[in-house]
Length: 187
Figure 1 (cartoon, one colour):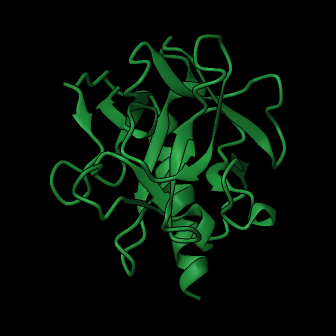
Figure 2 (tube, helix red, strand yellow; figure 1 turned 90 degrees about the horizontal axis):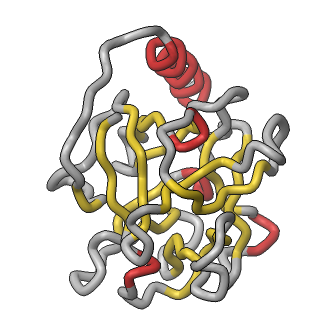
Figure 3 (cartoon, one colour; figure 1 turned 60 degrees about the vertical axis):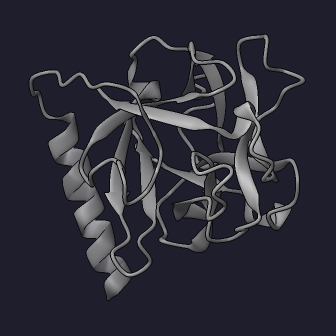
């Protein structure tokens, strides 16, 4: 019942978010939950601390089904770089929905069991732990994002592919380095 209510709310948020509205620009913020957390219903762009000109991006070349690749790409303001924020009231976590149809949710592949290099992709909403994102609890890297599935792993931009378009985004041991720092602004 609770999952059905969340799914219904999610569909409503997407419908509202894709309807025409005036543009809202915002100043950059670190992703710090409870301090300057993006509000549920906000549409944001997210970029990486190691490459501030590169945004979290749903790969349009793999778009359409579960498993769409997530990467870093030059920030361009297109729908694949816009993310609708929604909250999980019970856990305090947030979910991130790609604004590019078919509006899938940022998700960690459960088959990687949260291991280093765990695959990050878009998946149909199911409310599971791998779709619930939290800030790091460690004071030395509060801008990091973790899932409830693997609280010791952080969303990470692969440093070996950082200097090309399509930088790999995966999960890695939290280390406080710039490739694990994420910032947001309303769009």
